[in-house]
Image 1 (cartoon, rainbow, N blue to C red):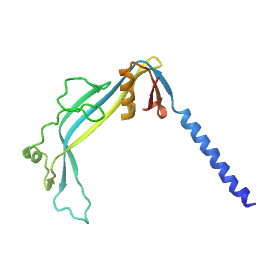
Image 2: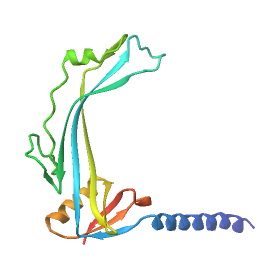
Image 3: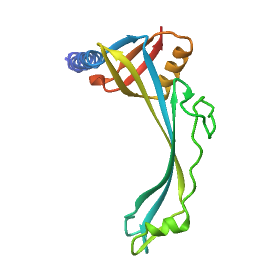
Image 4: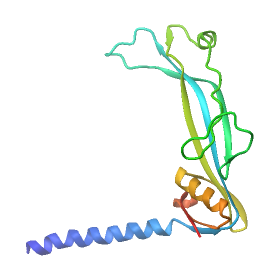
Length: 178
């Protein structure tokens, strides 16, 4: 009797797991393409936090973030689209020059009554996308660094890519050189 009670939940879990895997596979498309462009947009942005004076441990921080100067650079298939003024990182991605740090006057100009501001910090961000042909249309989807690097290597060797798209074809989940 006990073995049949423990076997039932195990069978149910197995059935639910296989159904979940089937649904995940059904909602992801595969595309093979020879025509694609991998893009990485690198950005440096100065940011400072403004908080009310007199913040104490018993009062939550009610701060806000202000953004200042920003510089961006577009990398297309591993190459910068303009002459880079910044550096290339260990992953082969080019970065722009760091923009000028905000002055005290600029920081004070955005300060509201009763606030203090923190030392500005540089924020480093990168956005990856992949543009390709799918069903006769050009599609641009978000990607990650792994997809970008694979696409760059494939473009350098002029090889097609096999893409696995995420749910509802919302992003490029995986790329393989063909």
